[in-house]
Structure formats: C-alpha cells, structure tokens
Image 1: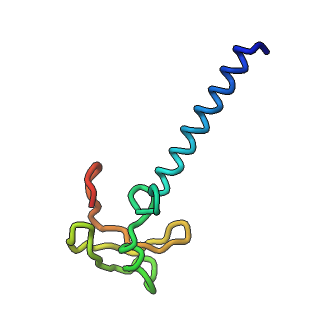
Image 2: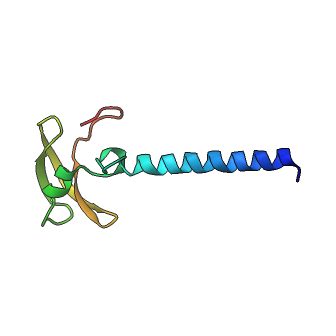
Image 3: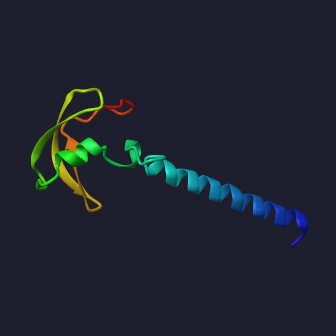
Length: 92
C-alpha cells in the first residue's frame, strides 16, 4: 500500500471513531447524565421508588407541572413513564 492509501485509511478510521464516540456520549444524556435522550430524569426515578411495574404515580415536571405517569422497568431501572408524553420536539 502506498503512502497516500495509508493516509486515507488512517483518516477514515479517525473520523469513524469520532462519530461513534460522540454518538455514544449524546445517548447517555451528555455530561453528568442529565436525562434528555439518555434516560429518565431523577424525578421520574424517585416517583417509582418502592413501586411495582404498572403502578400509577405523579411527579413534578421540569416546568413545575404535575405529570401523571405509570411505573415501568427498562434495563433494570424503574422509572415513571408519562401517560401523555410531550409531542416530538417538545421538552417537558
């Protein structure tokens, strides 16, 4: 393989590693694990503490409103899932 071919392979590997690493970080809720697309907010987790799957709960949303939810388990984590989640593009 010539020098130009090696440079192309190294560049492609570098770009691939940057893209996959940045995607992983954004799926985990970013720095500090602040919820978002990475998981449920702390209020949703606290609302289901000591509850069973399917139990109805309420908790204070990010805007101070009351969120009606049902406890669900995902990846070993119990959290409240809103009964009426915000529409796509809207944050709660």
